[in-house]
Length: 363
Image (tube, rainbow, N blue to C red; front, side, top):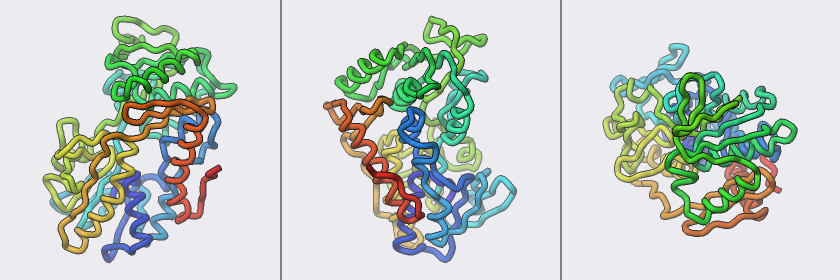
């Protein structure tokens, strides 16, 4: 397995409960832990400690009897059936599953600027947030749920909150894929928290952050939540990819060019239907991937497919003890929604924490 993403966490749990479906398995990943990004805005606003929301990949791998190689994957050779680690170590495989996640898009979309702090990779983001001090003016770029929650988290950062926050939502507007009631509640909350919203695309020209035709002056920090970009490795490895560079997979999460390779999460793109790059979809894909890998290891055709629900529940923390809930055409706001979000997040984490010996507070 290459990468320690949400889907591979579910695979490790399956192997702990049901045994490894092969003589030997290896997890190649650069980090001993997976950080659940849904808790990061809560950490920024003081709801959680820095290490809340970590899944212990090393402990899960050990419990499953999986060899752990703590290195980054540099190349997957689909013809020779090998994966090369950053140290040059070569790992042979019969089946390969890739769940490395995506990469940040800030440099590609905005340009090069020392003030940019990309949300991806999330661990580097957390490390840098701890060292930035108290910037006077922060621009959060990205009008999706991630950008909104980070703006709220930064506004409620205790004694280190910026005096001014601007959310550059993009030309598609605030939360373009959400229902109108949820967008209205978020817009109202942003106004109450004195977070300015600009619905225009952001660029950086001659060192100046611009939103459409307007310059945004005095920005000390640019937090980029622009969605997931594709890493270079899949295309360079010769795997079939979509137009954006994500691994093209069928409904069983198999590579469309090399059926002995599976992929899930932000690094993959289903070709039979649209599955957005979102943590909720990666989480639900994990058990499906585990079943299909078990079937493939037994020489059987995979039979399970993840079908996205017609609608999903989204809970966005406001950073001040409430959350905004969005489900289908409905939206609501309150402390009960924040408690529900905490319960859902910790329940997901605790199913793996029970296996690795580190449990989140579910109160």
